[in-house]
Length: 181
Length: 359
Image (cartoon, rainbow over all chains, first blue to last red; front, side, top):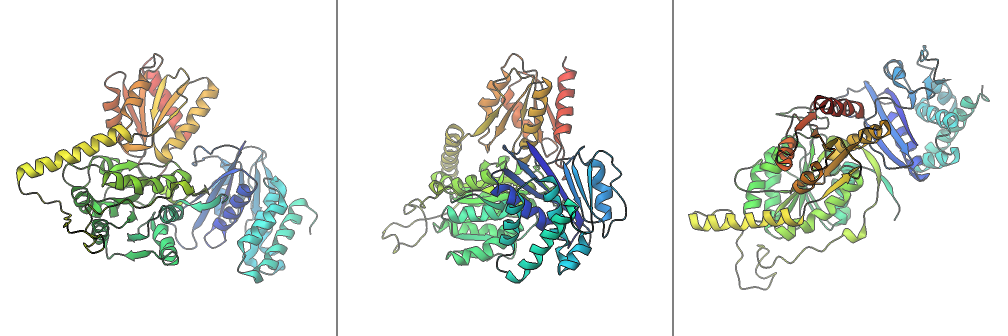
């Protein structure tokens, strides 16, 4: 069973970072993983995306036209990648910045105001963590406690950032489960 | 030690250290720069040397100098940088010094682009620099294999006193995958007292060692080139490595593909198998020496109608595939070289169209 997750947004939104954290979590859960960044001639403020492949066997092609899931942090990313998502995939839309929907009736669409939630949790910079948490909570692609550990590990050495990110994780999870505000 | 998630470029740098190489000279170039970035931090930590040359030409000769003195040494670059090092590669080969070169290929010719490519196949396997020399060329298809090939490259370079090249593409350098560094691949530098200019006092010798590639006398140069040829022939006998895939099936077509491209082809083979369309694959892990015999044997299968070289170039390895097939079946090429890696779907369409033409 192979699952592909596309993370996309503006440069600076921490897109590559949340892909990295999910890939780590997948590896810790015992899966084969690959993290493939976009490294084209991108401009600052331009689009950034990365693909994470999680599989229970050796990963073949790292080039994937149709990912199973999408986390879109800005509108151009949603417009570009939403049509490519496989049916029944999870599409997380950062509704703080995106005023449209995926335009698909065959995917599991999740509107998460990630920037607003992150702001309330302490820093708008944690919007990526909010979106990641919402995605993992909804897709159950890895165990949520494992994700929490991987986020902590990522911020080891910058201890003061951990409480904000833990709060962002928790609020993202609640938003996905519909038990938040 | 468990698996760690690492970017290909960083893993390549770490692998060299774990293999026992503490001398690294380089010049930054996308998509390889992370090796230099990583080692600029790591080499001082382990008591090694990282020196950024003023250009790749300079780096090539830093490698020659260090190798000639008997130091274990390596460099990394990407296509245009390897072109600049090619003169030194010729001299190092001529002077029979061991060294490891890593090329994380990007699109060309000229400045080309920065995305993945395999368009330096000719440069790596047929020369690049001048003269009758060969590099032992290994092509990894993933980050773990890149680590293992880098670690194996040093003792191989010393076994043959010849440069070894690791030929990866931009995706191998940029992708993160879980890796382990096998302790058993750590090696001690071989004794080089009989040839390296490491200092007569150091090696307690009264014999002068001379490292050179100049032989003005025709008989001497002829003899020297015979020695080199014997080495390359020995590589052909002893160092061929390849991975067969789905060769137990009655395949209609044989794919030959290496590196990142071979992973895409593996997925294509799997998808086609589900459809009942059998395709076999030989994945060269060494590009020189090339797995000629394995390919020739594979196309002898009764069901096999065509051999297809699939590569991220406009048709380079296909010439070696044609040579290996020896006219036993038609040989086709499919590829792209602008920087977009072909998808499994594109590979499937190409292979199907070649088989269809023949029925």
